[in-house]
Image 1 (cartoon, rainbow, N blue to C red):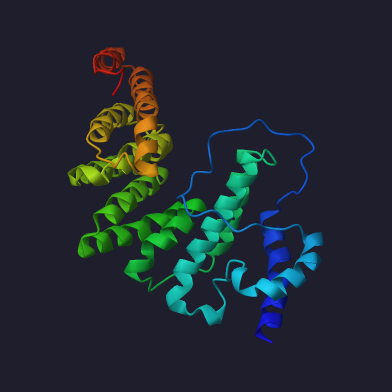
Image 2 (tube, rainbow, N blue to C red; image 1 turned 45 degrees about the horizontal axis):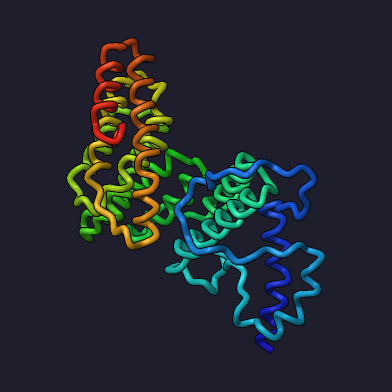
Amino acid sequence: MKSVEFVLRAFVQVPKLWNQLQVSTRTQNPIPYTQHPIPHTPYPTPRSIYPIPYTLLLIPALLLQSCNFQPPPDPNDPAEGTAMQAEVMQRNLNWASETLTSRTRERQITEDVAAARLQKYAEELSNSIPKDGISPSDAWRYGEVLRTAKRWDRAEVVFKLAIENAQRTKDEDRYVNDSMHYAEALSQNRKVAEAISTVRSTFSVSNTSKAPILFGTLYQVVPAGENGGLKVELAKLLEDAIEQHRMVIVDPKTHAGASFIATRRHHVMKAWEKAIELYRSAGRPDLAEVARKKRDSSGMIGI
């Protein structure tokens, strides 16, 4: 009986999720392959979404393998319990992100379309986030939903709570990641000076935890704040973030470590280019030239 109930629930959930993500099953005009996934925290490979017409064909298989098939749970389902709501909400968002990223790699949708659908889904999820009484240990999970939804006012508040919790629990990894997201929210909210100060506060973490600093500065904080009148300060921040990046220690035997080493030069070069661009646009070609010389004299061109 439980298997039948599960199948019925799955049968209802699949079309619902299909409609939410609006995933096309046809590719009339293939889109050029891109190497850039949707910017979101990486998680395990998502479960597949099947087209609505095929759900009827899936029922016999689900009856036989119901224990192995489970669509993402509803964060508002009372059966999930309030203690699990933040985790379930984050898991749903990660599932949607990985699914949409997979479809961009298959050239079925563009990155812009995928990002828009993910933001819309995150907005729907964020409506379920409690307005008060958020558990500090869950703050970073809610923050991920809010930043994906681009609800920066609430994201700023929630990530500040997450940072305080990371400091209290001495979780360095969470501290540096949540600090970078907090800085992004500040920058988006036109508090660029405070965002720069927040990024610099992460420079004291150990070398094994420094990896997010350059990435967050280059791809989140600077783009959000470069029109706020502090271009020289942001350029200097990028230069300092490059120095932090040089200190990063990773295990080259792991996939993540090997990937970091393989792409290090690419990101460092982009950071130098952006810093030089910011100096020039701020009317400081002298500082741009100094930065260029520093880049060219730093060994393997920028590293």
